[in-house]
Length: 190
Length: 101
Image (cartoon, rainbow over all chains, first blue to last red; front, side, top):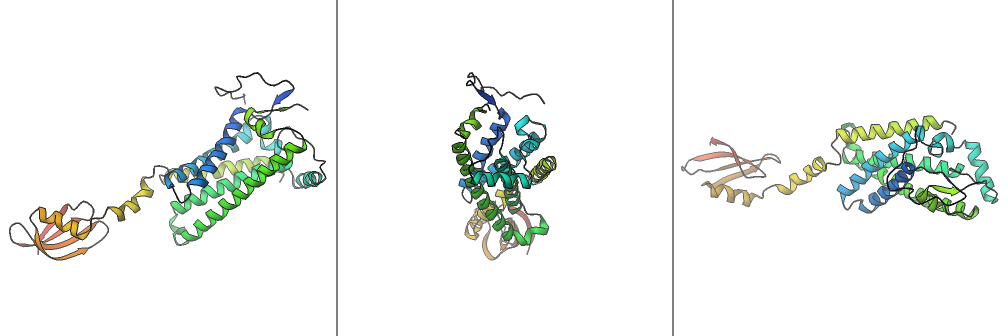
């Protein structure tokens, strides 16, 4: 799959000694999901038209991200970052001892977190959709669906907090700015 | 979990299924979701409804009954002085049907 180039990106010459890691579509989806989740959170039980639009955006963005995880650029692919259980545990053990390896794409913990976040986001949006437009068989459990929707939304918010903590820890450990990398798409080589 | 492609496929199918359901339900257009709330809000009050009928010459209502969230049945005296049974749109106040009482 050819590299997708979006307009108004990468006009500035890349910093020397850096390599392209995150492609433009991946970054757009990342910040799109972040913005949609924030919007959904703030508009919940307040501005339902906005809340619903944010939820629908999340469904679409996660879908495109999953597709991109099959056919996208190297570090976008799920085969590049979905860890094995053993690999994840080994990484977390090394992290506790501050000996975790640096990864150009997702590290095993980051990969596991991204995957968990997407499933939770999609699940939250699906439950919200069912709360709003109940399948007739589920109609008697409408209240239960709403509770589940809120519970999963709260759980996802906790995961977002852990995700940010992970980004911070990893940035400090390897002396790099991972937030900037998700904006520019570039990381220090080697 | 050693099945990255399976997980990507699962996530993609989930998104497509959810998206298809949202589309089928007309989600995002705000119309279907707004309708039930509008139904309660837009109903004419009984006095307002009688005022509209009075403007059309119906008076001395003897009975007024809300049949559903769309229909109100009113027994009143018509412009011709006869007792009539009216079926009135609960939101617009429009007379849908007139019957001899």
